[in-house]
Every structure is written in structure tokens, then in C-alpha cells.
Image (cartoon, rainbow, N blue to C red; front, side):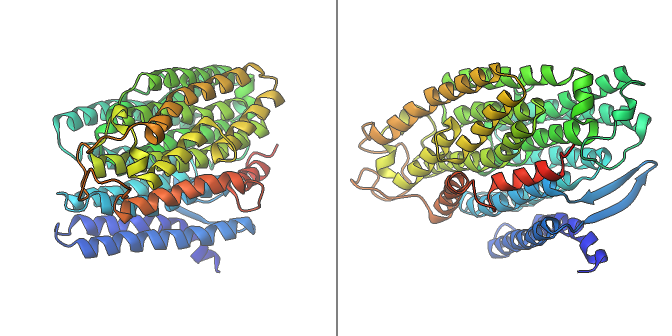
Length: 505
């Protein structure tokens, strides 16, 4: 492969979802076959290109696309092990969620608009993942906000419109803070490429106040999308969106964009050394720990399935922030692998919630009694996701928490173990009763809105295959990521590769 072709691959990955999305906007609602073809063709192209780049990076190749933009700040798309981890997660879950959304929205109005913005959202996410400097990151970060807003308000109900206004208020406010932080750093250094270990070490003694202010602006702005308490208020409200949107927001797009941005800022802009010298890590660690516990306590109070899952996301994403703030290689490994593990488990849980709602009109926890008798495969997938969130081995969530615990001991932050254990117990406190209710509760004679014939008929019948297949696929991946964690092709192995290459001293 020539270097010219290699350098074009990052751009092609963005275009593989952008171009189909732009065409989909122009399609009529009755052109379902063409819309499905464009969606799936874009997915396949993105997966193939991502696979090529993963193989290339693992063999030492580089992929870098540059466009001049502003003095000292080019627009850069490039790949390293960290960016490809996020791109790979986005691509795999885009495949699953596209199939799920086609089945979920069958017969619904405004599907061309939905799938158009859906593709733009994925384009912004992979662009953000491959951004090579802060200016490029900021551009795609704001494009992600604009692409996801129409998805949040897609239903057009008063609740959806209110949720959209809240979402915009939070995310545009956070984006403004990120812009201010980027501009401040740009005045000091320009916008050089992200560098393992950071590029601000020489400025710590000269500009401690400016660097501290820039860090606070960036992390606070990114913390809005990462849903760090008290910046999390938009996330539970956004649950009025369709289930595929909820899955996208929680598993890969918005909240992960915030967490990924914090990883970049801490490790590739500032570096662990300057963060320690400026005493910035400990407040971030406390914020992450507080978010984990607070959100779990709020989850205990919820009565709706998606609201419970929303607060679970607030808690679980903070595991990533916690691992980053510990500033140790083992904890960083736990944070990076949880970026993938949480995505797989959480998307599974939201698929299941969508299956319950779409097939039986079950939205509240109290209506889940005996639902495993009616939809055992969906309930089995829900069980895998829930037990993984608790941290039960051998599901993927256990691997993340194991490394975070070891990482806390490595850097002498033993109190973090108590937070991890407490959070795990709270996870069990709100998930285990749901599992008991679903498997052992007395099923009703008829479900609230059975879309299958014979709602009260004994025996089991599952949901539509296009809703079930993605659910079982991601649940299986959640299990395999834990069972095969010790192999050379697991998310854990890739996270260890990132630590060895990106965060080397």
C-alpha cells in the first residue's frame, strides 16, 4: 500500500458513513430497500477500512490526512492504537444498531431523516476518534452535538422537544468551555499533534495558572458529554428518544466522546507528569468517585427501565474517568478496556429495553414480572449485560473492575477500592431485583401490548429477528470479551498495546 493511499484511509472512513447519510436525506419514505442498502453498504465499507487500519497500525504503519485550516492548527485525521479502539467500537456497534434501528423503526414516519442524522452522528464520532489535534477534535465534537440533537427530538412529542432543549443547553454550554480551553492552549503553543506523554511539560513552570485554567475548562466541557455529576442532567431526560438512539448515546457516541476526550487531554495534551505537578488529578478522581456512587443511588430510585439504565450509564462511564485520573498504567488499562466493555454491555441492555417496549409495551420495572417466560432470549441477554455491569466474572465488566482495583493499589489510592466495591454492591442492588422479577415473577395473563398474536398464550415467543439478532450479538461479545480476555485479540490485549505504545514514559 502506497503512503498516499494510506493517508487517505482516515478520510474514507469518515466518508463511508457521511456520503450514504447525505444521500439518505434525499430518499422518499417508501424507498426502504435503497435506504437499507446504503446503510449496510456504509457499515461494511467502514468495517473493512477499519480492519485494514488495525492490521496496519499493529505492524507499525501510519495513516495521516492533513488539511490546512488556521495558523498553527491544521485539520488532522490520523490513527494510533487509541483512536482505532474507538473507531473499531463505533464501527461494530454501528452495524448492530443499524440492523436494530431498521427493525425498530419499520413503518415509522421520517425514517430518511432519522437514518440520515444517524449516519452523520457516526461520521462525527469516528472523526472525533481520529482527530490528530485539539482543533480537529473540537470541530468533530461540535458536529456530534448538531448531529445527535435531531435524533433526541425525533419523535417530536412535547417531552422529546423539552429533552432536546435541555440537551442543547448542556452540550452547547460544554462545547463553549471546550472552545475556550482549546483557544487558551492555542495562544500558548498553537495546536500541535497529540503526543503520548503530552506536549505541555516545558510550560508548567512558566504558565501554571493558564494551564490549570485550560485543564479545568477542557475537562468540565468534556465532562458534560461524559455526564460527570453535576453535569449529567441532560442524559436521563434524553431517554425519550427511540431505543436505537438511546443505545447510540450511551454506548458509543456522546458519553464516550466526552470520556475519550478526557483521555486525550490527560495523556496526549498535558501528560501525567504535568497533571500531577499542577495537582489536577485528585479533584478529577474525587469527581469520578462521587459520580459513581451518586448515580448508582439515583438508579435505585427509578421505576422506568430506560431511566434506570441512564443512571447506570452515568455511573459506569465514570469508571473510565476514575482509571484515567489514577495516572497509573494498570488503572489506565482498566479505563481503556472499559471504554469497550461498557459499550458492549450497555448497548445490549438498551436493545433489550427496546425489545420489551416494542414487542410488549413494557416500559416500567413493575411490568417485567415473568417477562423471561415470554422473551427468554432477550431476558438472557439482559442478564448478561446486568451481571457484567455488576462485575460478575467472567463477563467483560469484571475484567475492567479488576484492573481498576489493581491500578488503585498500584498508585497507593487504596480508598478507591472501597468506592469500587460500594458501587458494585449498589449495581447489584438495582439490577438483581430486576433479574429476579424478570425470571421468577408471576407473568400476567396478557401483556400490556403484545404485538405478537396470542398475547396470553402459554409458552414463549421472541421479538422480531432484526431486534433480537443485534441483542444476542452484543451480549455474546460482552461474554466473549471477558472469557477470552487473556488472548491476543481481545479488547484487553488492545488496551495493553495502547499502554505500551501511546502512554510509554
